[in-house]
Length: 405
Ligand SMILES: Nc1ncnc2c1ncn2[C@@H]1O[C@H](COP(=O)(O)OP(=O)(O)OP(=O)(O)O)[C@@H](O)[C@H]1O
Image (cartoon, rainbow, N blue to C red):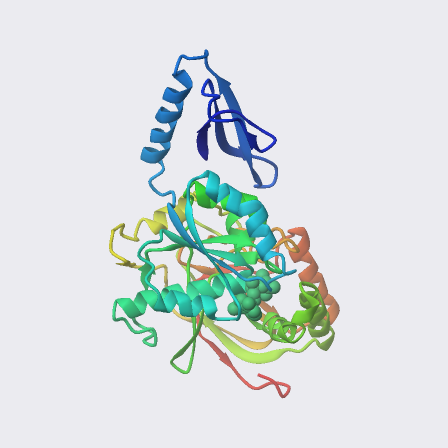
């Protein structure tokens, strides 16, 4: 149930409040392909019976008592230039009315430049909020995520530049309203990139823990990632595509075609440990979504509390000796989620879990551009990949190759 209101609602127009003999229940209606819509049911009680008022009070109190994880107050960041530049329109037209209906108080910040959201999160008092909302693409979500992790470590006096230090888990959750170019993180967590579906997940207090992978170079923290870490092909595509931002979402296709034609491979050694996975396997044909049993078990380790920061104690999934693969690679991909997106609805690793403490490694050795194109095509039709194993985080030792590293 999303909300209950006294009066009938037809075509978005509410009846005057005198119509106290009927009430409307707004609920989540599941449609095809993980899409959710707002359903409405009108009920009519005998006139002057006060029955409708009693029903409304009873249902509202049910929502209050059973919806403890529902947010009451949200801080919304909108990136007006992400994707096709429709974030403001998407938020105002599709999302804000749902937040209003659910009685959620919102504070909206439309960003004027990159890192404005980051600075706000790092500097402002967020104690009045139950969560943050990112209206934009993966880049906007990443900006919020980095800031929230930074803020959490700083407040607890922890160091982010100590590779052995445990990361503290933030109190605030981040909701994602897809309005970017790829929206991979939203697509992989919710199963679709539909703003209304995401807004309804936020309204009913749905949540999904996620593994965060940290990337280090020479003992220095570079980035955090919840999705794909790509060295070689995907790294090249992302860095090239940044130069063609004016193309909008097409920039990824253009940069991908350029990288494919260049067919550049890189020499290096990949070291990894194979994860212990009784519960999950990259070929077990599961699809990890909100409520996944494997991830719920894993996230039970995160202690609940009322403090701003809680200490997370990651389960050790690591097994055995380090293993090595040496050679020339077209792509070294480490993905801690399926990395599904509209262009690749099953993702690079369709059965990867969002929060089981492991990541899947996909190594593509040097091959012809045509063979690599076949591999990329399999991402779009859901066929099995060549070789996959679930892994904990790993170090990569790149060597200079072909004049590029
Ligand atoms: N007002 C702004 N002007 C310029 N850049 C901004 C602004 N607000 C946020 N940004 C930056 O824009 C970057 C990209 O935004 P976003 O991820 O929303 O869109 P996208 O790159 O088109 O989508 P995707 O990441 O899904 O491919 C983010 O890293 C963010 O820091």
